[in-house]
Length: 215
Image (tube, rainbow, N blue to C red; front, top):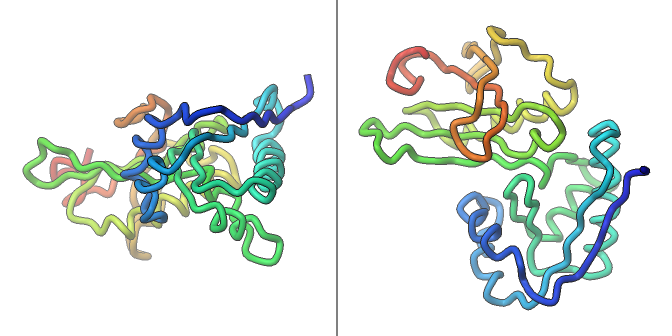
């Protein structure tokens, strides 16, 4: 079967729980929480029979249809269910504009942040969500005493690298951390945070690794 994209309009908001779950990770959209009470309906854009084509072609096909829908029926907000990313529709259109800098993962991949509640040292887990939709590993890091904004940028950059080149980072390889001198080891493992999936875990080593020691 050829890859297809389906667009349908629901008579009511059926994915309110998914929207609410994604709000804590909507760092680029301060008004995300105010949208749901205003919404009366939703338009769903999804795909069928697309998992067997190359993931870059698949994303491009989906984006093309989504852009057309946003131009015809602009919504209050945009939720990517596979990445838990909430965006302003105009911001998304700008990220896909041929007149600007094309950002293929804008929306398709999100970086999330979780505080470990029972950690007296203030441990944090940050991960990407969305690459798993393309059969690629998401990125994960469990750390303390590092700037979360810098880690978010590093994780997103690494997600872009994996999207561009595939799952080529092998266990034991290193990646640059937040400074040019940082060389942090990588390994594939199961995710700490749902949904369960394979991730590329980044180990910053002592004293920044979870538990204050190298894992």
